[in-house]
Image 1 (cartoon, rainbow, N blue to C red):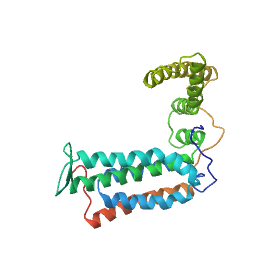
Image 2: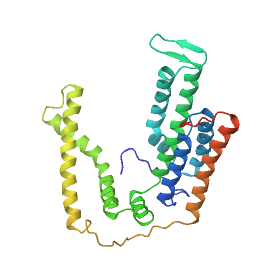
Image 3: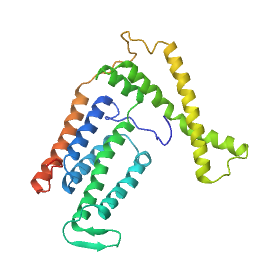
Image 4: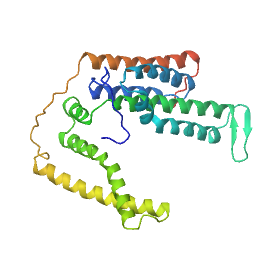
Length: 260
């Protein structure tokens, strides 16, 4: 895929099996979803920030890939501050919403937690080739090969959407139908992209069936996917981040189990 992707330098994390990266992202996410507090999210975010130095992404690639997260996290926190459950003293009253000490603390915790969950997921998979991920899912996790190969084929096609969208826009302008209202133009062009994607998907499915990708016979793989010491080290680091964030919140007295 291309899109907004930037070159990734060879790094220690880039050479780790994608299944281990997936496990680490899930482990950190589950640990942070157990409680909504500032301490656990802050500790996890700080430790994840240290880990990102070994991701192989340069500054431009990092900001391009994580830009939606930096924009979305404060918005989620602001929504919580304005409309979250009030507790403690009222800090400000805006007429349509009130800001209390409790909602302000909760909003900060939500912002930090979104960043702590999203950053490792985005950066870890920025260093992952889709084919390597498919190999790991099929060979290590033993997922059905038809599901894995179909997902890989679809993922490879996502990068073409940007080129298709640009080509559709140019074609519409050449025919003189690209100067309509923004909403009308977007809706019409999105429908055209949907039709184009369905046609391409049908042709791809037929071609894959013709080449035997739909067979139930035992498959062989061109590249073996294995796990070893690097994967174990990364898993230990992920477990350490999860345990440290929970322990810090418990010691600080801010740990609040969401199911309690």
